[in-house]
Image (cartoon, rainbow, N blue to C red; front, side, top):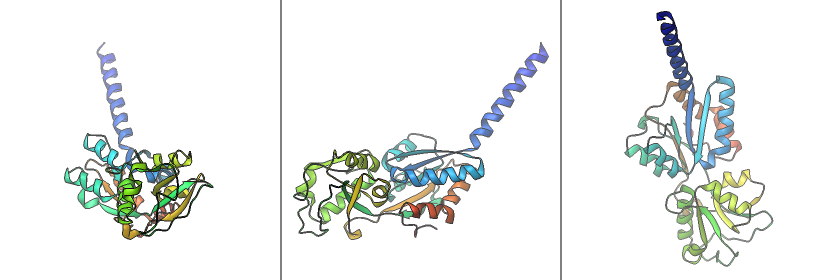
Length: 255
């Protein structure tokens, strides 16, 4: 009887050790929705070579930051703006010394395929009269792309005439889908999002002077594992940079 109990105890301990070892092999990355394609490709390549499981969660930076604040387990966070990274930093949830500006992007106006319209990116242009229907972008007060969009619309003096026709979405990819389906006749997304879709046309790039710089900061969370640190370093490598560049991101920020 004693031998059976001892054996059962050893099996339980072995199972626990196996669980812990498996958990240590997992890396959890929370990244802005606009990074979906690039991070998925980078993670797949890394997993193939390192035999490590990388779990990814893509959503708006605001949603991810709030989830982390509430205790969601994550090793790495990549935001689409500095605001939400600073939000977590102020709550002492990220390793400050690990924070780097990884990527840049551009803000573009899009329309459904074959339904583009003429736009001049100047203050005198009548954007509201250039198309009918709704304009989709991220939620204007919290989602980074929506915040940038609102800045640009205001700086171009287009805001007052178009604000009642704006549809704010949960993240930039949701805005892209609305335009793909022609449920919105125009959208404001990142250049990289427009690039991955064959169902939309990029009409014009918003001047960088009309909005805050579009910067993607990267950081480790406080409880990041050693394996996560290694992947964090890989995200800054030349191999990762090549994949980011393939999707149209500005990699000059990479350190």
